[in-house]
Picture 1 (cartoon, rainbow, N blue to C red):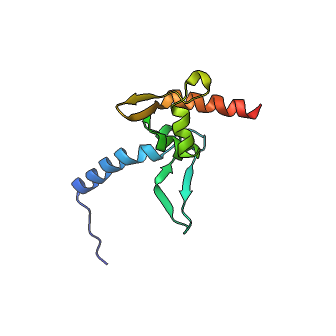
Picture 2: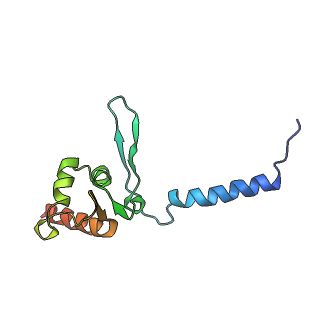
Length: 119
């Protein structure tokens, strides 16, 4: 049986591609990443509703992304984003008609909310 050797350039291209893609999915620490997957009624996974961990969240979150991460109803997320943080709302800002929350501010709010809920 004859084996074909892969050209060196093809191997370099594959290596370059893997080095761009894999670091996002490899966790170098011992902590287990939080995984959240929305399963549809027919058993399929909704790929738009897949957020691996808090580190995979974008820098500025939309209400939909907060909804997918926390599983809080979307309407409730909008209500919380329109509420002042001093009164328990999610820290947010507007750009035109769109509303966003900074990832770090949201995660701080989320952690504080979880702690308050455990009391």
